[in-house]
Length: 211
Length: 211
Image (cartoon, rainbow over all chains, first blue to last red; front, top):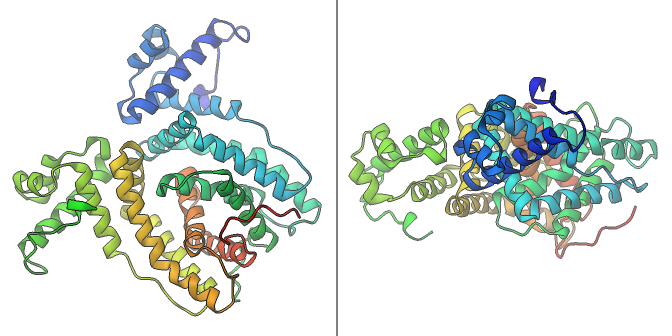
């Protein structure tokens, strides 16, 4: 991350620097949802946040760096994984968290906007990839524990199982007008777990078996 | 679709009207890839296509209608399904077609751009949903035949199985920097078929069973 991650001015939690950052990141989210990445403007974001534009330019410099910081904060604010002792229940919790996030009007619009931003800008894409990497790794231990319990085969790629849960929810959001409901979340979890049990996510990639 | 679908001026295949349409749609693809939906401009597209701007404005009127026509043509030009007699082989063919399309530099950039457009514009989103609906329905008979052959349970939702094959490939494209290779395609097909065999895609949505 380099400089996007650094918070040299933070003196104490809840101090002025932290409050400025929170206000600017919130304003950046609003602007991203309203006008989209291609029309983001640091001066407009500073105005929305009630912060001097010099502060915003000095601290973030570019909209891409501001978006990268926003995604880091989104990752930091995300809920931790749930560990229930069953892979299906854990992946259902993961699926429902993704579903609730994407179905929420503000969060859903924000995630769509950052995906659009990542399509338009390679630096934004890198920041987005880091965000998903953090979130996927957060849930990977649930899969590792399922391997240890013997629920799914040795050699299963934990991150691929976690991604398989998220994928149908994002695909549904982006390519259909169908509702993103709990039934869709549960089905996504069940499908990923069924495939994991069948050994599909073993590393290295298995060659396709014939039925 | 309404007026976007109509081609009132087409006199014969390969005639002047068809040539104009092909040139404008190609130019629209180029512009979408290069500048993105938010900066699309019919005058610029007409110039790229070597066509009078009056023709473009009279025929399509707005960039959204032009994009809708572009997506209809993309659906019409897409390859038909493959029927091999095995669900896994059919879904592998589907997955590899999606993978080749998304991994192709021009096609991949075009699909990303239309997804970004759909995020920014609800009319563009409707056109994108129609595109995917056409493509998913094209492959659904492979799943119906697998049900008839007894490969997967009665009551399986064919379109959900086909979508489950595509989803991980789009998710990989949009949220990671990992290569979209044949191994990823084969794994997507295997995962969807394993879940279908396990009865995950039966209608109505099954409540999650405990392991």
